[in-house]
Length: 364
Image (cartoon, rainbow, N blue to C red):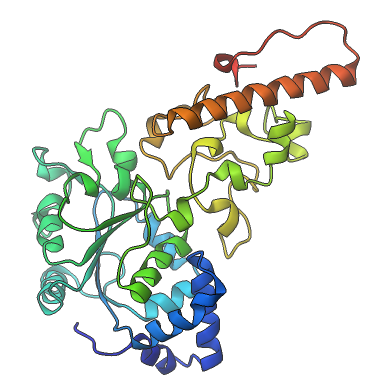
């Protein structure tokens, strides 16, 4: 439980050389969007940092967030980070079960009072809901959460279910599911949404906490700006086609084969903030849009209720500011108009094209 081993000592114990350690620090700096000048400071901080106790709670979820994390290959930044924390309780990964498992959680809380980190994936049935929808060891999710976070230094909500309620909260929300931030009001919280989140984003938040002893800078939805500061659309390699008005109309037409923009096939990239386009998935091999499928907007609140996956939204979802919504709508109109003009020029058609309004986007 309580562990006085420093992170530097732990890495050396696992056979990481000084050179490997500095590479690790450089990767950590890059992952957290910090300049190279911060590498020495990161190295010094990590050398002295104690292995923090982490209690990972899983509630109304599909285990996809844990699966995402465990799909990494050693010796990655993810592996090094998780070799360097004391993961004292995790419903899926722990060996203990039954009373022994709950005893481990209680011990971690008492031995690390005020210092441990609580990581949560999954939503919970909110206060007033039937606790029978989700219980562990006869304890309701709500009671276990509130009991565990009372001595925590910080809370990390991993995955869209924990951050915003996710699929369990989708209409008609039979279990009365709520996000962690809806009930935990007296602790620092960082949301790491995604269905599931990218592994480097989860570990990047923990790395930042190890280095600086505090959570990273957050946006208005409590997401780390280093990973959620730009939209999928802004970093997408298909963006030039959007600007030219070149859109795929179905998943097997000429546009789709040429890599044109997928906005009219339901891509939610313009109103979704995440690092998928830069960090990618599977050790950086690909990501949904690169694989030919539009972004589902899974890192945004209420994405299950935001609109059909294969129908373009005429305007962005409600969490986008009015100015940003107007910009996206205007950009879409300009893009479609440019595409129609280009098509008319190629075909030599003399017939005038019908004016396309924002409400008609994605219906043609």
